[in-house]
Length: 504
Ligand code: AHR
Image (cartoon, rainbow, N blue to C red; front, side):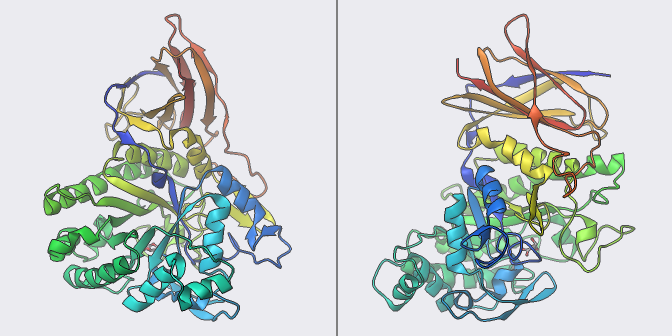
C-alpha cells in the first residue's frame, strides 16, 4: 500500500555550498579503469581523442566530472611520474591491490591532464611517498606547475605543454597506514611535514592532502584507531601545512552484488548512510586538534560499494569470489540508491567536507561507465549522479520528511535533499522502501516545474548490460499540482527522483 510523506525544507538556514569537488571521481591504474576504460591510445580503432575513447569522454563530460583523482590508490605509492612523460616510456611493473601488470606508461601526466581538460575536470594528483622521494614529488609539482624557465618546464614544453598545468590538489601518499608504507601515524606525520614544507616552497598555492584513517574495518584489522589525532597532533605548529585530510570508506556488508536478500538490500543502503559517522568523527578530531582555529577540509577521496565478488578480502563469506580478481563488479539499482543516500550525506556534511571521490570512474568498483570492446554503457550509479546535476554549486538546505514508512532499522523510508540557486529549488527524493511506493507532498509555492526525472526498475538488482544498456535509466516524472497550489509526486518502490522548480 501507498506511503504518504511530506517534505519540509528550511529555506532560511542554508547548510552551505555544494562545491563541485563533492562530485569528484577517482581513476586508478587498476584493472581496466585507466587502460581500456579511459585510454585506448591514439592508434586504436575505437574512436578516440588524443587516445581517450570518445564514447567515455562524452559520457563523462555530460555527467559532469568536476574533479578527478589519479593515478591511485595504492598504485600511487609505486608510481614514478618520469616513467610516463615524453616520447620514451618505461614499461614498469604496475602494482596495486595485489595485481601486478606490465604497465606501458602510455597514459602519463600530460595525457591525464589533457583528459581533465577534455572533460572539464579539475585534476588531483596523488603523490608517491611509499617508494618515492621528496625531490621526486617536488619535481613533479615543478613539471606540472612551474612558470620559471627550468629544465623541467622546458621538458614540459617539449612534451607539448608550454603553459603550466596549474594542478592545485596534491596528495602526499595514499593509505600510508597500509599499502602506502605501513607507517605509524607519528612517522607518517614527520614524513608529511618534510614533503609538505618542500612542496609549498615549489608552489605555495598547492593544496596538500594528508592521509587520514577513519574506517572500522581497518581498525578491526589492527590499524591505529587514533591515527587522525596522532598524525595531526604530531604536526604541531606545522598544522597549516595541511589543507585536506583524506579518509576512505567502502561499503562491504551488503552481501552479493546481485543475489542479495531484502535484509542485505537494506544493509547496503544503511551502510552508505553510516558514512556520515566517519565524516563527523573525523571532523570532531580535526576540531579538537586545531581548536577550530584552522580549516582542514575532509577529503573523502575514495567512497562507494565494494562487492565481495570483486575483492580478495572479507567479509563476504559464502559468496563466490570472481577469479581472477579484476575489481569489476555488477552495478545495480541498489548500488545507485546507496549512492543516492551517500549524496544526501555529502550535502548534510558539505561544511566539513572539502571533496569526495567515487571509486572508481570506469569499469572498476562502483564505476559510472562500463566498457566492452567498442561499447560503453552508463551504470545506474551514473544516472543518480546525473540526476544530482542541478545541486552542483547550489546552496544545500536542511530538509525533513514527515510521514512515510520506517525501514527495519527504524530509519525513514523516504528521504530527501534540497538545494537552491538563482534559478530555483532542486529536490532529490529517495524512496528506499523495497516494496512500498510513496506519495510525497512538496510544499513549494513555485509556479512551475523545470524538470522532473525518476530512476527506478522492476527489481532492485536490475542493472544495465551491454545487451540491455538502458534497463535502468531516468524517465520523465509527473509532478502533480495540489489544490492549494503546492506539488506532489508518486515515487515507486526503490526509486530516486529529482524535481527542479523554477524560481517564482
Ligand atoms: O580503489 C581501490 C583501492 O582501495 C585503492 O587503490 C586503495 O587506495 C584502496 O584501498
